Structure formats: C-alpha cells, structure tokens
Length: 328
Ligand code: G3H
Ligand code: 13P
Ligand code: NA
Ligand code: ZN
Image (cartoon, rainbow, N blue to C red):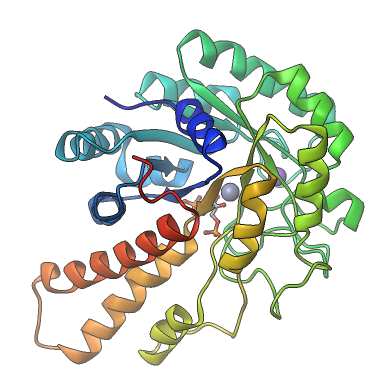
C-alpha cells in the first residue's frame, strides 16, 4: 500500500533530512527511482503532474506505482499530485489513488494569472477539507516561482505567470506564510525563493541575490513546525548538460540549484525537494548518445536500459545528499 506525504515528511522532520520528490511519467522513471531507493534504503515520493497524468493515464500511473510498491515492499512510497491547478484536479487525483495532492493556488487555473491571496487561501482550504477527510495529504504554494534578476516567471514549460514581478512579489512573505498555513491547514508549504522550473534557472552560479535561502530561514522562524517544499530544484549538473549537447542536443549554458544550497535549506525546515529536469536530461542525453553510437540498433531496451541506469545514478546522488539514504 502507498503511504501519505505527511507520514514521510513528519519522519524527515524528526530526523532532519529531506526527500527528493521525483516527477515520473512512465515505467522507466519509476524503475530508476525505485532502484536508487532500494540501493540506498530511501523512502520515496513519486509525483505526477497534470501533464504526466494526461501522458500516461491515471490507471497506468496508479498500477505502475502499485507495482513499484509490490516489487519493493520494504520501501515506503507516496503518490503525489504535482501542481494541481484547481480543486477538481485534486479530487480526481484522490479518486484515482493518489495519497497526496498539491493545490497550487498561487496562479489561477489558467496557469498564468497571478491569483489573489484570498483566492489561494480559499481553494487550498477547500482541498484540505476534502483531502483530509479521505486521509490524503495536501501541499499548498505561496508565492510565485520566477527569476529574481529578470522578474520573469517559468518560461519554457508553461507553468509561469505572464509579465514581470518585483523581488517582493517573487519571494514568499514570512508573515503571510504563517497566516496561510493557519487558515488552510496544509501539511506542507511550497515557497518561492528565486527558483523556477526547467533548465534555465540562472545565467550564472547563483548567490544569495538570486537564490534566497535566507527567505527559507525567515519562514522557518515564523513556522518552525511546517514542512517546507522547494520547487524548481534540479541542479542541472554540468555533466548532464555536456552529455546532452555532446550528441547534438541544443541547450545554452545554464545553472540550476546547487546541491550544496539545498543542503543548507534542510536544517531550515525544507523536507521535500522537487526534481524533474535532471531526470529528463539524464534520459534524453543517454538516448542521444546511444542513437549516435549504435545507429544500427532498433531494440528500445538497448537505449532505455542505460537511460534508466543514469537516471537511477542521479536519484542515488540526491538520496545521499539530502540524507534520505538509510531512512526507509
Ligand atoms: O511543474 C513542473 C514539473 O516539472 C512537471 O512538468 O507539467 O511538463 O509534466 P510537466
Ligand atoms: P525542476 O524543473 O527544477 O526539475 O523542478 C521540478 C518541479 O518543481 C516540479 O514541481
Ligand atoms: Na507559484
Ligand atoms: Zn513545481
């Protein structure tokens, strides 16, 4: 059986570690995370976006993940909805066996208009009421993920707001966070600290001006018992960029969230760290390499196997770096 996010994050808080939450879309992603979890004895959060649900189908996702739990009975597994855009999306996830949902009311359901604070409180509180009655955990989000240098929201994956926001608007306000958590009853709170989704987070190695770990410290002071969540937290390591571009992939030089910065955030209450881009790069880079090096191969297993292995290596590194390893 699957367990809730709340159970996992409470254990993480008691033992001062964080869980990477990996976005999954198909069998190979799930195998990669589970193999890494098995190798490092780590508990697991598998998360599916609306896009993943549309790509794979809810029944396939649910059964793949139940299959993972059956194959690895000693590893606790949570199935989480990433970025639910409205209450009905969260309800359909609950109906389909998710044990945790995110209601992201920071934007309206169009995915690009910044929502009012009262709207966010209302939709999030509504989901908490329904989810908790069903024994399901809830993550809320306060603040807008976006780039502190340019004021722009997430660009390439269609999750971001339109227009530009100021630094104040882009960073989660600690006093508002306190009010939000008490009025909604969320189990975990996603915060905005200068990260964004996708590969292009920063145009240089981030410092405190563009990646505000300090904001996490301030929120943690107001809310010492709330589990905090970092989105847009792929590290976009140089070796994965190089693998992708060495075999014809087109990507300009970019910087992600360094693992060392995430490690600083763990003692400040961060318990869940969302990672999608790093696994996308590992899979696609490996497939590109294999297509180039073995042009006569047409058995998909021959390139999916090494692609899955490289994704598992990335997962293992994160489980170890976040001290998830050994906590299953
Ligand atoms: O929220 C962003 C995640 O990386 C999921 O992306 O909506 O393209 O599946 P997606
Ligand atoms: P990345 O694009 O940095 O992997 O972020 C994923 C994420 O936050 C999913 O919600
Ligand atoms: Na947001
Ligand atoms: Zn996210």
